[in-house]
Length: 66
Picture 1 (cartoon, rainbow, N blue to C red):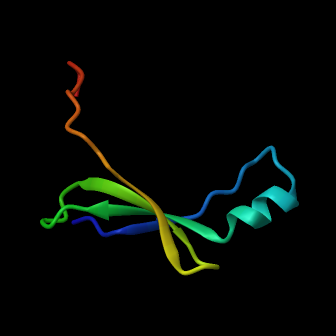
Picture 2: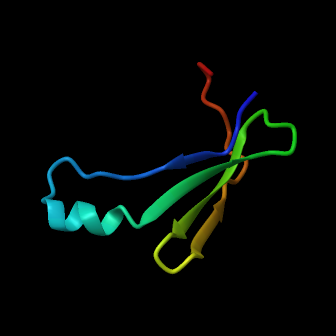
C-alpha cells in the first residue's frame, strides 16, 4: 500500500546557495483513493505555506515489456 510521499530536491552539481533555496519546497506525490498508484504531484512552498503547482498524471500507454 502506497502513501503520499514528500520529497525534497538537492541538485548534485549546484552550490549551496541554489540548494538552500530549493529546501523551502517539497514535491508531494499523491496516491489514488485505494493507495495503489501515484496519480499526481504538488509543489508546496513551506515558506509561504501555499501549493504553487499541481499536476495530474494522464493515463499513459504501457510499453510492451511492462
